[in-house]
Length: 406
Image (tube, rainbow, N blue to C red; front, side):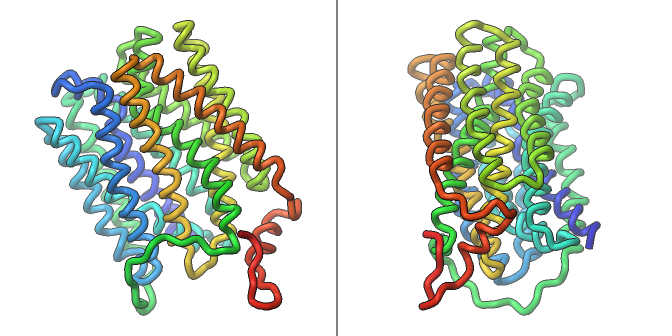
C-alpha cells in the first residue's frame, strides 16, 4: 500500500511538472513566433478553459468506473501535449499543446488526489492532503526550474525539456497501472457540479482563499519571468525560472511546517502573508529592486502555501466518501479558475498600460481581496479546536434529516 501511495504522489508531481515546463520558455517562443505578453496569457487561458470541464467530467467518472480507467488516458494526453510543444513550428502549435495538457491535468487532478486519500497507509486524510499539495506545488516549481536549466545550458532548448518529461511519465503510468483494481462500475452520467449542502459554507470560504492563492500562481507562471527580467535586467532562463520556483519552494516548505495545524489557522496565517508579498511585489517594480522582489516572492510563496493547504485540508476532510473525487474536482475548478482568469485581465492591461503597471494593479487588487477574505474567516464562528471536529459536526445528520453547514 505504501509504495502505491508514493507512486500516486509521483504521478501527480510529474504531470504538474510537465504542464509548467513552458513557463521560462515563453519569452523565447515570443521572439521565435512574434507574439506579445497578451498571447502568453491567452495560451495559458486556453489550458485552463479545457482543464475545467475535464475536471468536472473526470472526477465523478473516476468515482463510478475506477481511477485507472480515467488516469491512463490522462497520461497519454500529457505525452501528446509534450510532443506538440517539442515539435512546435508556430503559435497555433502552442495553443494545441496547452489544450492537450489542460485535458490531461484536468482528468488527473481530482482522481489522483482522491486516490492519495484512499491509499494513505494510516487512513489519514490530513496527511494525504499535505502530500497532495506538496506534490502539486512541487510540480509547479520543478517545471520552470527544469526547463530553465535545460534551455539555458543544454542543446535543443525547445525540445529537450519535453523529451525529459515524456521519459518521466513512463514510471507515472506504471504507478497508475498498479493502483487497486476497481470494483464493479456504477452507472455514471454527466451532471452539473454540486457541493453537498453540509459543506457549502466551508467550501465557499476555503475556495475563495484558494482562488486568490492561485491567482498569484497564475501570474508567476505566465508573466513574472518577463517581469523579473524587466526589473533586474537578468536574461538568464535558469534564473528567471528560479524566481518562479522560489515562490513554489517557499509554498511547499510552508505546507510542511504547517502540517498538523487546523485548516482555519493555516488560512488565517497565509492570507496576510500573501497580501504582504503582493504589495512588496508592486513596490519592487517601482524601485527596480531585485532584493525586494525576492523578499516579496518568499512572503507570497509562504502565504500561498498556507492558504492552499488550509483550503484543501478543509475540503478534503469534509467531503463525503462516496463523492470524494467529485468534490475535490469542484475545488480544483475553483483554484484553476483563479490561476487562469485574473491573469488574462493582466495580459489585456499589460497590452494597454505596460507590464509593470499591470502587475502592480493586479497585486494591489488581490492584496485587498486577501484582507477581505481574512476578515470573513476571522469573524466566522469556531466550532471546536479539536482537529477535524468542525467537519464532523457539519456532516453529522440532525433530527428531521437536516444537515448543518450551508
